[in-house]
Length: 113
Image (cartoon, rainbow, N blue to C red; front, side, top):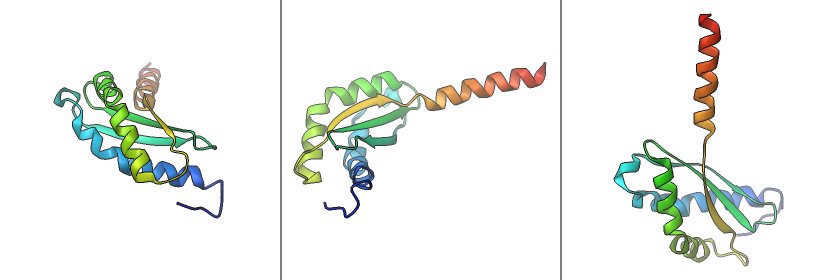
């Protein structure tokens, strides 16, 4: 993977990392419900790829499941990405949806008063 613009490189890597990791979400326990990748952020030097996930029912269980399989997932990223230095994958829960829902509830309460 080569890029003429070094500023676009992290975004390109993030896109490929998302495609590589997406199938691993199917390995999450059924109790998690639907698990999705909300975004992938790659550091400017491409040393880290932070994968934000959300789960319909049990997000912490989904996160734990992915972290248990991190070594296997990291191997797949390195194998398929084919760049000199593979970014170190780390998973995080995306709580932006929860924060948005809380803000919406607060606004609704203010409007009702």
